[in-house]
Amino acid sequence: MEDQTTYKANHVGNRIRKIRELKNFTQEQVAEKLGMTISGYSRIEREEVSVSVDKLERIAQILGVSTVDISSFDASVFFNNYGSAEGQSFSMHKDVEAWKKLEFQYQSQIKQLESQVEYLRKQNDTLISKLGK
Image (cartoon, rainbow, N blue to C red; front, top):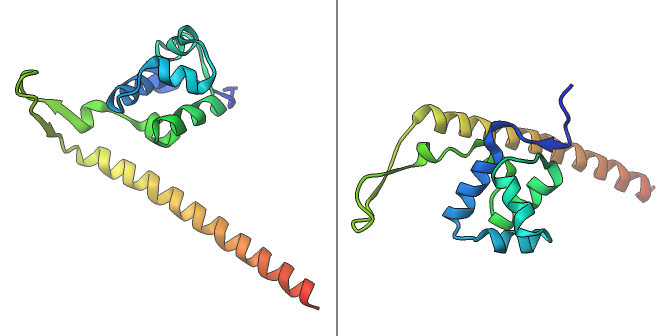
């Protein structure tokens, strides 16, 4: 049975590193915000240790992304470098299937959240009507 409290699958450490670099954070900055040593944080990015769900959520918050963004991040889908460092030319690579998959994931999450909001509204209305009597 898979442990639900840790996350090591899908190269999450490498994905965290890429997002951290795109966001112009250093390992030192992220480690400090996590209250970790640089060495300990570096082990996460090198995928030498599993990441707890809580720690993944904290890393995502520090980087200003969601855990879904981290788990589904694929730099090759979003950026292709076409030029030298001097020219610094970049172009977007349009991977329609990847975009559709992301859109489906977000739409599913939205529907789930809408359902939860509707349930909570009904619970709230019920509570208010009971208190009003």
